[in-house]
Structure formats: structure tokens, C-alpha cells
Length: 577
Figure 1 (cartoon, rainbow, N blue to C red):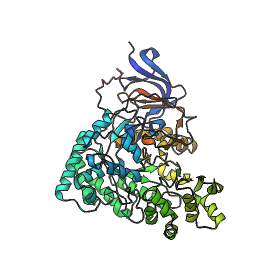
Figure 2 (cartoon, rainbow, N blue to C red):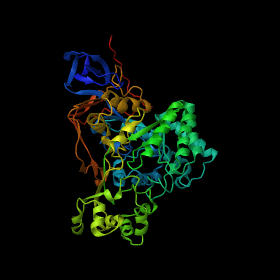
Figure 3 (cartoon, helix red, strand yellow):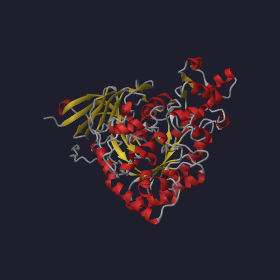
Figure 4 (cartoon, rainbow, N blue to C red):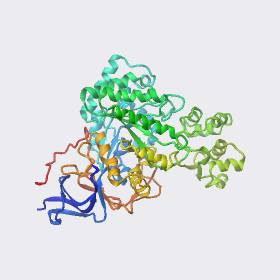
């Protein structure tokens, strides 16, 4: 009988610890790395040829919204196609537990705008066999998974469960009794396996007011009082466990940053700040954030930034687009039914306000947006034109030029725009900070216009191979070990004897991101945009091959990692040496 289940033979190993690369074999037994070195083939049941390949720890994606999708897509794609072996769900304070049965529909509606997850898919694809957070984790554990899943406890549903939707969204300060009950529910969720808690703190109105509820109103945590967040931080302090995540486009930078640092100090636990993003036209924005993060580090305050390091563009239509909410006039005009939105965008009386509030936060210059999918005969002439060129040819303001096409196409016109973070020199400023995490994939969200789940492949092909900003040793530490530590997964993110065998084997020279495609694979008849990868020879999760030659093997060896740890009872096999 063979000594090992699998041997990965002949690859160049990048172990995630920043140790210099070395060539060796890896033996796996019962889902765990059992031996590293020169290992005879006849000692294993299966041998995976890694000659000419790089072998590295699986990537850990700290910022996803697969809370719904994991129930119908065990691979949590597109993340699973790009070497990710562990995802963290429940980000930004959004999630589906605790939720009473009568509140389920309203909670799903909440996710349709803020994360642009299709309602029909959630209705058709979620089993809803839970009410409490512990029951939700049981449902996740029972679901087939080709991915490890680590859960945050999202704050919004917790506050709604105690205060009700209306009161939670009213901005009133909870009573002492309500704070006590919220903390009890947080303790219950953390006892069940939560790795910490998350929230979004966007300005409820004015500049930076984005990521809103389906009706254009702020999300619960946008109007949450600082005192409430402090009560939650005290829970982590008492437990001496867990970490926090906050998504913020700061309305009052110094005050908001001081609040997050205060939460990290009070709790004594790490805070992950989203998002460190380059704005080509305003480099002072990310520079101020990086300077703040450095001050925190010098003071011993554990605040980490998560950087948007992908340059994945946006392909969108006004049937689904929700990222102009920074501008009140655009927000109001894009809320409602299809017919209501079409009428509002066509209304001449609204155009002055829309022209006055040209959105600039999410996309680059408005005039650079390209018409890539005109639908009506009268709009075909604008194919591959920028909005600026259409405006020039028609003598219209850029807003009128765009919206006249949108109205003629019944909201179905496809547009393409690169995000405002395309300068490589500015990206390098973010990459050069060794404690800024890569990612913000938003996996499972914005599925009709964003494919940022490709970021691990893009890190290796663009940041490392093309631009030489990092060594591969550093890149694999940033993609795996550092996020695993912050997720509370001490066993993962490195290739060491005794570690779970979450491993990627890839062809570095030929690794690539494939062109975007539209696929109709969502429940409820919905579709999404995806980008696949080429060059992943194998992806292993807990020792089982889930991807082989870029294709799914339909092997579901992923786990729910309660408190970041495996629930399986494995016999840890270690080398006698």
C-alpha cells in the first residue's frame, strides 16, 4: 500500500514564507502536506507532474460576496478558476443571517443594488434553511464546496434582527438593552465559527455616498453610530480573537481614519481597511491613505489596507449599473423599475441636474466611456465611439449624448470604461507597501460588469512578470500567507509539512487571463460576465485536485473553516527528519 496519496513532483516551490525558491517534491497524505524533498514515485498512489511548473500555496481572497453564490456554484467562480483556494464571505457588513423568514425577501432586495446580485438568482438558488447565524454556517458546511470558506459576521443583519429594518436604518442610537442583545448575537455567531465582524461606513449623503440599498437609501451601517461599533470591538477584546473589516470612502478622512484606528486599539485585533485605490487624476488620495497606514504601523496599531490592484474595466448597461450613486441626481434617476428609470433618464427636466453632477468616482473621465453595444438601428452609428466623440459630432453635452443613446436602446446599450487606476507608476506606490493586501475581488458581486476575481493571475502576469514590481517570493507571501494570517487561518497560506494541502501548480511563462465572456449559468435565468485563466496545471484544495489544466474536476474538497480552522480530524503525518 502506498505511503502517500499524492506526490507533486519536480516543481519549483515558492512556499509563501518568502524563503528563496527551491526545487523539490511535495507528498500529501489525508489532505495534509506530509513531506517535502526528493520523494520516490512508488511511495504515492498518484503522481502529479510539475516539471517546469511553479508550485505555490493557494491564494486567499479576503474580500468576496459569495454568501449566496456558494450555494449554486461550489467553485465560487471566477475566484476558483484563478488559483484561489480560500475565500472570506460576509464582507462590508452584508449577509443573510440572522434573518427571520418574513425578512428574507427584503434582505435579498438589499443586495440587488449595493452588490448588484440578481434577485432572481438569489430567489432560485438559496436554500434558506436557516434563521440564525449558527444555522447559516451549518448550511454552508453542508453545501458542496470546491473552495474553503471563512465567514465574517456581517453587522447589518445583526442590527436589523434586533432593531427592525426601519429603526436600524433610521440612524438612532440603540438602547443599552439593544446593544447588549446585539453583542449577545455577535458572541453566538463567533462561538459558531465566525472569524470576526464586518461593516460598511459610507457617508449617508453627499460625496462618497455610494453602495446603497435597492431604494437608494443608505445601508444600515452607513448610519450606525460609532458607539455601536465600539461595543462590537469590545466583544473581540474580551474574546481576544477575530478581526474586523471596514469598507469606507471617507467623508471626513481624519475623523473616519481615527475611528478605525480606535476600533483596532480597543479590540486589540486587526482592522482591514477597504479600499486603497489609485485615482490617476488624484494621486494624493491613495498617498494619504498609505501615510495613515504607516503611522498606524509605527504606533503598533494593526490596521491593514486592501489594495485594488486589478485594472479590470467595466462593461455595463443602465439596466444594471449602480455605481453612479455618488451623485444624488443620478442615484434618484436610476432607482425604480425598468420603465421608471427609462422615463426618468429621458425626462428633459432632469437633464440639467444630471449634467451638473457628472460622476467621476468609480470611472475615469466620463467622455472616455466607449459605446460597445448599441442596440437600435439609430444608435449603430456610434459603435466604438467614445461618449466625448459622440458629443462632439452631435453638438451635445456628454451626458445628453450618452443618455439619448441609452433611451433609444431602452437601457440596453453596452458601454465600456477602464477604471480610474491605470497608471503603473502609481500602482507601484501601492504595491511597494509590503503590508497592503492584494485583491478586493468582490467575487460574487457586480457580476454583470466586473471581473476583478482575476486579480491573483493578474498579480503574477502583470505586477510580477510584465512590470517586475515584486519578486515571486514576495508575491506569493502577499497572495497567500499574509491574507491567511489576517483571516485567522494560521495553518494555511504556506507550503510546510503539516499544513493543509491547498496548492496551485502553474505555468509561469504561459499564465494568462482569457478575454471576457458572457455566460448564462446563474439560477433564475440570469447571466454574468466572467474571465477565465489559462496556465493552471493543477489546483488542489485539502489535497484533492479541483482544477486540472484549467478545467473543473467537479471535486468538492473545500471546507467551512470555522474560526479559520479545519473541522476534519486528520492524522498529521510528519517526516522523521
